[in-house]
Amino acid sequence: MEKIKKSDHFYLIDGSGYIFRAYYALPPLTRKSDGLPVGAVSGFCNMLFKLLEDSKSDDNLEKPTHFAVIFDSARKNFRNEIYSEYKGNRSDAPDDLIPQFEYIRQSVKAFNLPAIELINYEADDLIATYVEKILDLGAKVTIVSSDKDLMQLYKKGVRIYDPMKNKFINQEDVHNKFGVTPEKVIDVQSLAGDSTDNVPGVPGIGVKTAAELINQYGTLENLLKNASKIKQNKRRETLIENKDDAIISKKLVTLKKDVPVKNKIEEFILKSVDQNKLYTFLREMEFNRLLSSAISKYGGTNNSGNKDFEKNSEKTSEIKKKNYQLIKNEKEIEDWMKQSEEIGEFAIDTETTSLDPHTAKLVGISISNRIGNACYIPLNHVSGNNLNEKKVLVENPPVLPTKSSAPSFKPLTSSVTSSLEVKKITGIEVFFLSFLRSSSPSILGILISITARSGGVLDNPTRAFSPSI
Image (cartoon, rainbow, N blue to C red; front, side, top):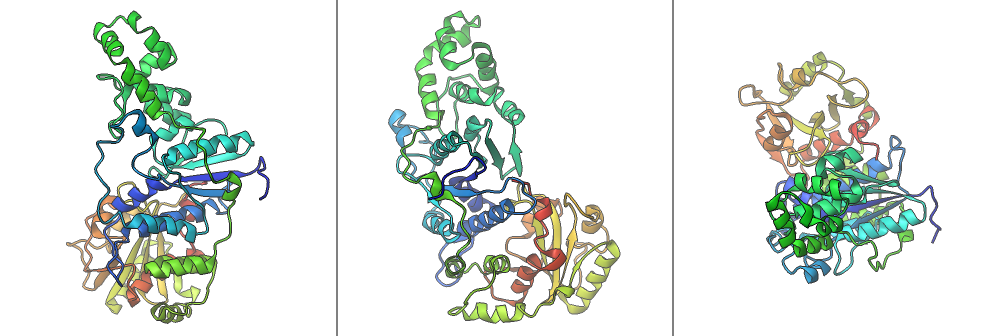
C-alpha cells in the first residue's frame, strides 16, 4: 500500500447519521419486484453519490485522496458497561428500516468505498481514532457529519462539514453551540448531559451555565475540586451531590481515540468506480433514476439481463443536446409553458441543495414535456445568471402549479419532488395531478431522469451551488 503523504486528504463520512437522515427525509419506497423497503437505501445512495461527485469536482480545492464511510456496529457498546442506561431512552429502529441496514452497507461497497465498523464501538469513536492516526502522519481530514458530538474533534488539520446545514463548522459555530472552545466541549457536555443519548449530566445545569462554569474553572475536574467554593447554594450543593454522575458523563461523551481498529488508513485510498459492481447493485435495487445518473457520469456498460433498462437506454441515447435549453429570461419560460400546454403534460423536477426538504434550498427547476426536449431554470446558483425566484414561482404563468392556477394540461412530478416537499422548500402549496415513482420505467419517468442529467449547459446544474468540500 502507498505511504501516506502530507498532501493527502481523508474524507471520513458518518454513515450512521446518513442512514437516519435518508430514512426520515424521503417518502416510503419499496422494490417493485418483491416489496422490499428500500427508501432509506435509495436516499443514502443518492446522498453518497452527490457527496462523492461534489468532493471530486473541479470547484473543490480540497479534493479527497482517501474516502471511508463509517458506521455504528450495534446499539449497545462499551459505554453501556460504564452506564447501563446509556441510550436506553431510544426506541428500536422502525421495522421497515431494519432490513435496509445491510443493503446500505452493500451500497457503500458498490461505490467501491470502504464501509468501516467495529463491534462495541460507535462510528464517532472510529472517526476520532482515525483522525488521530491521520494527523500523526501530517495529512488532513474532513469529517462529514451533523453530529454535535464530533465538534470536540475540531482543530488544526480537521474540517467538519455539516450536510444538514450545507456548511463547514468553524470555531465560532462550536462556541455558539457550547459556549466554549472545542477542547472544552466534553467538559460542558459532562455537566449539561444529553437527553438524546440519555447522558445524565448534573440536574439543573444546562449548556449556558455549564459553559460559564467551565470558562471560569477550566476543566470539569478543577470545577468539582473547587465546588465547595461556589457561592450559589443550590448550584454548589447540586454539583457536590451529583459529582459521580458528572464524572460518568464525561466518560460517556468523550470520544475514544485509541480504538483497536482493524482497517488501516492506507486502505481508504479513493479508487475509481467499478462500473459493473455499481450498476449491478443499482439494477438489483431497481434504482433506475440513479442508475441513469451514474451511467451519465461514469460511462456505459453491458446492460444485458435488464430489458426495460436496455429499451429505455435506446430511447435516451438518441437525445440531442441541442434540444436542452438554459432559460435566460421570463419570456422563454412563457414560451415553454405554452408549448407544454399544446403537448398536454409536462414533468417537473426541482434541483435543491439537499434531499431533506426540511433544510433544502431551491437551486433551480428542470422541466421536460417530451423525450429529448427539456429546459433548466437557474434560480439560486452562486455564480452565473439567475432568474428572479418570485417571478418564476408566483407570477403568471407560474412554473409550479397551484390549485388556483393549475393549467389545463397535466403537471407531473417525481416521487422525490412531492407537493409536500416542494411546499417545505418554496413555501408554495403546489398542485400535481400525478406522481411518478423513480423506479418506474415509464416514459415520463425517463423524462425527469434525462432532465436532471442532461448534457451541455445543463450538465450537473447544482454543481456551482455545491460547497467546496
